Length: 462
Image 1 (cartoon, rainbow, N blue to C red):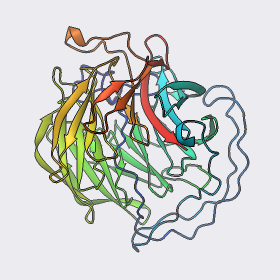
Image 2 (image 1 turned 90 degrees about the vertical axis):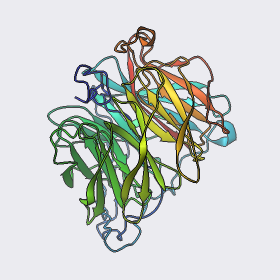
Image 3 (image 1 turned 90 degrees about the horizontal axis):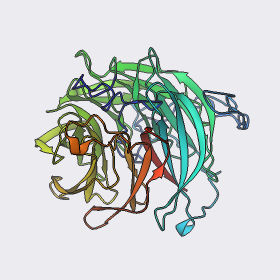
Image 4 (image 1 turned 135 degrees about the vertical axis):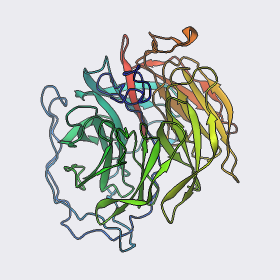
């Protein structure tokens, strides 16, 4: 399923499917920026969330005990954006304790990983030393088979993950312990569509959206104040063409617009979130030259950047925020220098001065500089230091470090690029704040031994 939609010859290898073990293939996406901004309408009046039961300590998710679940609490009102108001935000009054790393902040890296496609997945928490870039492994939580992508709530209390399962993927919610990085399962729901590649959380924290590869569905799930996720409130097809292969969902910072890169259909679907439903915008899609996989907005949201999977190119868009519309500009830029195939993820640095893309076949991370006036991106540097098939990566919230996950790369067609034993690790790079070049910090940290794979990487700082 998600395998490189493009080359059916590499089913496991590419973006979508690769999910090998629980993480399954889809790419990570980190997509649009999670700004503040409102949905547009005022929040619904529904009941406020109740106090709910305390989180139990039970066993791990998916195997043994289910772990304590949160109490049901009230449903809380859902946002409605046709009145132009700003939705309520989850309370952060009971925020996490002070940290114990540089600057009295605690930073964590979370990964989903597995030993192979179809095997049980794991979520691992690691503490990131903001002074040195060193990682210290913490708790591991067992998860469902084909566990893939994750996303955090804006208030940092909850982690949401999706699976590449069929006939229905699953969306799970976990409570994040800010003091230890440990996770506790809250609940798990079926999405009703096959092979989820990506999950995104609305800036208000009240919605989660899931992109599905096989049928091209996008599902909209309510999120209660206690982190409980609900069954889909709305399901839409991202495109009418057969096999759109949705690979990511990305909100703009206002939360009023949602974008869905569709690898198979070579387009980005454009939705507005209105009346608690996803409504196709006008136009409903934007065509792309190449099989677009992931999308990220620039810091000012005047531009957006997409990475294609098979072609391994960078696509630039202008963005009309008021209308919620993307427009492609210029021609796609070849992002990688040796072997096309395997374009993975894209992230814009918080400074807005550069962006990063991953090239799995090349085992590379590539830095592009961004022209602040025109939005034009120019390839500036790259590194393959200790990297093998870097599917997903993340920046720490301060923008000081880039953390990349690795997988075995035996599928590369060029012999020098084959690195079959380099998977299952996290590699930390320091980011040069002037030019975006990357310098590896220390010995890579093993998350999965043997030929394991890291599917998703996420970061939090408290």
